[in-house]
Length: 253
Image (cartoon, rainbow, N blue to C red):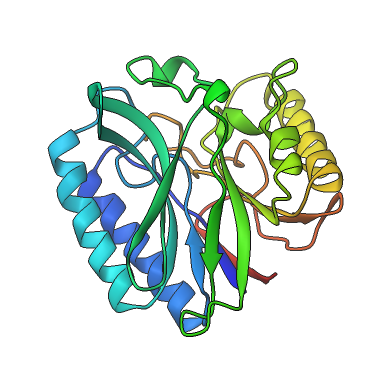
């Protein structure tokens, strides 16, 4: 199964984000990919006061565009989810198969300050394993995928989602990130992100990870991403893309 990753700018402008994601879909389609992974908040933008109505309209547009391209999606976006308790604001990766059918969503667990108006996923409810099917006619080509959103990848005491994913025999971790960058601690955080991604891939399974190219709030930034985008297998990056600007890549799992 061929999965693409898109290191792309995540702005506050939903219409611009739609154009950016469509370009990524075109690239993934041209390169005969089965699924595309985008960064955290890539459709809505990553800020608490995101436009719920504009995001709903934009999601429908992206769903149809990917469906017409026969491309599955692992789409990072903020979302107002209709649940038993009402409309709940979530930070999600939304999974779609190659026919455009919604498979399910992973909600962010370990929230940070930009998630202050959102509800995090309760690990006591377990984690979701999404089945990604590459060959839509036979269903033979499939992967068991666990989604992690930015901070969810990093260890939090005994509540390690990576270790839980290991117990579920996950084939791949889908990591949509949008980290802080442009401060005096950049090297420290970069080294820590890199070491943990490599160790998690060694202890669990392959990881495909993508980051935003702008500041978290969507403002201009021309420095390196907060973590390296790419595919990590058994402790080593098997892809290599520049840490600056829009970059696409894929890997055949």
